[in-house]
Length: 206
Image 1 (cartoon, rainbow, N blue to C red):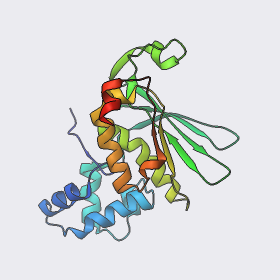
Image 2: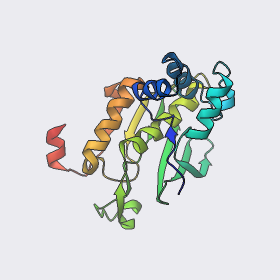
Image 3: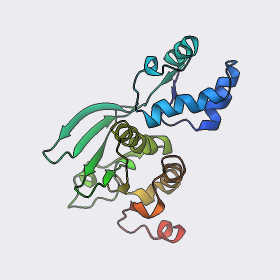
Image 4: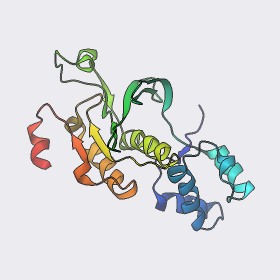
């Protein structure tokens, strides 16, 4: 079994700083690396031209830029992108990026693989529940769209948790991901919408 690689799309700055110090590299390299990932949308370590060659080699050996494997992408005439990502265990989830004429870019994000709520009008509900998404898997869906938009001089303005799953049935991981989206990706709390069928205990926590 291959060792797990560090995910540069989801690793917090402090953790990357500690890792680089263990590699005898200066802390400031962490900010440079995350700038390439989040602000420039690079997908190849070799594009990080201000990072020393030896460090880029270490990153290629031990890290990856994202863990979600793009299975399929559909793009409509209005620019909406609908993606299916394959997770490490083979489960599939969906993410959608919706551009609007007024300049908004809204990401629709999944919080679970499948759903246990069983709503008869919902295709996901008829699939049944597979598992909760981790906070990193939720955060990465947002981070991918955000970095891609920034590389095109645009920004992600809104997030709706209306993809696969019941967000409030995965309360802890959803909230952990959204706190990072707010703090690290700069999406304001008022621009984040959490949809629910009505999980009352979690609504009260909110």
